Length: 398
Ligand code: GLA
View 1 (cartoon, rainbow, N blue to C red):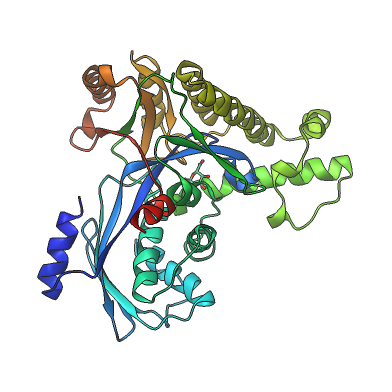
View 2 (cartoon, rainbow, N blue to C red; view 1 turned 90 degrees about the horizontal axis):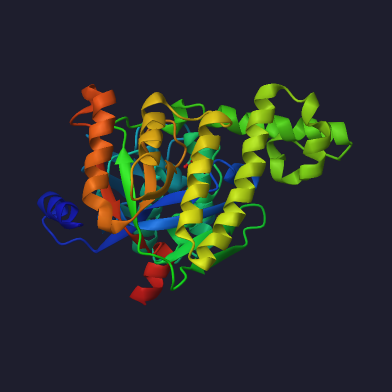
């Protein structure tokens, strides 16, 4: 899979790369949009992701070519500009900046980076950041712990790129283990790998790309985060709970009973976001139980409910993704599905019965393109399996 980036590296630098870094993409079947509120999420890394063939640069320069975007990026590892530029390479600039705040960086890195799937919904932004961090650390002889990868990648998004995301994406890509579901409490950072029960029927992960790529920086992502925080602020004030800065306030700090007692006083929009939060918390917990029991039918049902809550209460879809969601619901062989990730554009994901793969692929495609014929050539789908995150891969490589 890394063949193209290795060949390109060779043609640019006339030598073999020193190494190949890889970071998988992630899916989050339950726990949508509650990580930034300290909620509970379920996630898996998948067997597709981003590769970087890399080599050390003694002069401290970072020079990276993407096979997915034009222009080679260049900057000095110790002189990263403070302002983002607004292109894909901001994730590299941000990562170098965050890492260098705690680790002195002597060497730069040159390389070729390549993503295996279209952008949007699988957290390619966290994957590109973590992939690059691995390469930069390797040439500088730095070994990061899991929580450091997660922290630097999240800080890159929050402080450099300007997306107020939680820790879902980075945690899945770093912590997940093949054939397990990651159950992560984003308030306490406690997590568990839930092995799939022996009795669980076979499943695969289907990804349906709407044909619309996206960047969260220009979406309503941050607005929704603010609405949740504002709701928590009001509820704490009504209940006389001591609160702190708005930026440190999260719905997880508000007991459900308090919400029930003061719900009527909140503006309708805030109620919708908050209803989504509590119901999604319940689904993430119930989903974990269903997974432990191997009850894929129940798990899938919860995913469809989660999708509906994202559409009706959290209001984060776009017409194309909403139409994909309804198509998935009516397609035999789909256990459950929802928008993957933030859901403003990008893709939907589903857990499906592998024996029905061909029909599913055909049926979803025909129904979707009937509604959006102009997306012919842009829409696509693929099937994948769960995979190890970066830490489990490092352990295997030891
Ligand atoms: C994006 C964000 C995550 C999370 C999801 C929605 O992927 O980066 O932090 O909020 O959306 O669940």
